[in-house]
Image (cartoon, rainbow, N blue to C red; front, side):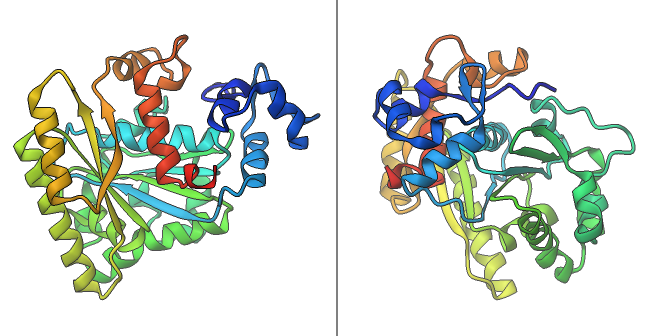
Length: 314
């Protein structure tokens, strides 16, 4: 896999900081003499610039959950991981979905004997580091495979569900990761329960569909019940409106419904419908690598900057 993918350009960073590229290079000493990759800045360079303006790189964990598939959960998870790494966050993506869509999207095809979460959850201190697959600078993956479908039986005990993902996050923090992104399966099983017990934030993607809204209600109820059962503080629950299509009246109707019922949780942005996602995956790239600016990249960049509190530092 190439190490030159997904990187942020100097022009892109200058645009985010509302600076001209030349002015940015002049104003920030961190850019002078630091390693460049082609016309792009490596993640360490971006991190130094953003740290200088007050971006917090403290450890955080974000799980993407929806009890229904096809909502954009995996797309949100992998895009967050890709972009966060280019912003200088040392990121690990945990793929807990037995379908392994996030794993395949990152260009990883695990060997038959490759370790997945079901192999390492009981002893992450000894087993996790070797199981991680480097994807690029600042981005690693714990891949998934069909064996993870056995997690419900392997983690049947409540104590295991409470501690499995939490212990994995502790180990990743010890290994120097700043951000852990989790792609959960679309069902209420051990992987989802354990993730809810461990993470700081749960993002629930939804779109303009009555079943999607119902799934959001169920997810919020289940998260609350899980934390009450285990005596834990509930993670922050955020709602991401994905697949927004302004050409359809139902999209705006759904948006108003979300604002009315879930205003405190609804993220102040929308992910517009775009063919760029499928094109990018088919070509083995991210939406941020398109030759022309596109709405998909803009929308997900806004999501990443908001959920990682980058915008609040600007």
